Image 1 (cartoon, rainbow, N blue to C red):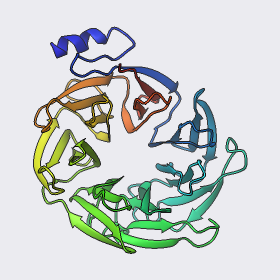
Image 2: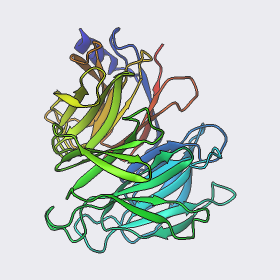
Image 3: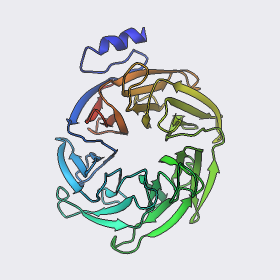
Length: 387
């Protein structure tokens, strides 16, 4: 029944679901000239109270202004080689995001590649921003602003390889927290959070321990995953022994006391995997494969898309799978325990997905989906039209 309903929906411009899935999503392409679409972010750039979309593309960092989605260039040609990541978040409470970016992407050069910049905004944020270079490790790959305590954030930057690494062997990857000074031109305090993994791929700031003001970091790489915790000015590390080598990692919640972790395994892998905790605990105890028909999986996000108090998983991949399809799908639990899951297409073969972000873009209380496509060269919003 579900299969027939989904198939019928493919003939319309709106993605729809069976009755027990509730939402439907309407796609809108806001840019069809994307070169690679390495990374995305959602945040209010100009302080008008509306979340904008930000994109790290091959040679430009840009933002799309809500609600017209007019494209503005933030910075361009900062390095000789490609850009690779972007982090945007309001860290000082003024209603406007601070932006950091990474570039000089060359995964084959573990000595001299990589670059990190803080972008200092002009009075008119539609104009070019001033790039302030920060010290960096080679092969910069991912970055996120992470809350350390009330009114204190750090820019956490993850390289792909350790310095001088060859074929994933040698020095560990230095995951570094940068703390922004009042004057961003001054020296930024740097702290090495973790340096034992040799190929890493992504991180997720999350409230895994909700009784503390700090966000924890879920951190994934070829050798597995770990939880990084900040308390009293220090970082501590706890490995997740059940989680296998992973490329993507995100936290979600089936309920307030039932968190889960979703991964794509292995790195650039073909499996979407769910890890659950025992009721009322934070220890991972169950592993479940939700989908083994993706290829070069490169994006996961979680949010309550259905408005039912449970969070769903959105995943995307960029290389044709066994059915010769790329795309974006949503996965949802059909029982409170999370034992049984269903899935449906958000984008069937129209998005070679490189990155995904979720947010309420039009203020209707429903979470929308933003995805950037690599070989499909597009940036889309999937409007949540659930009733």
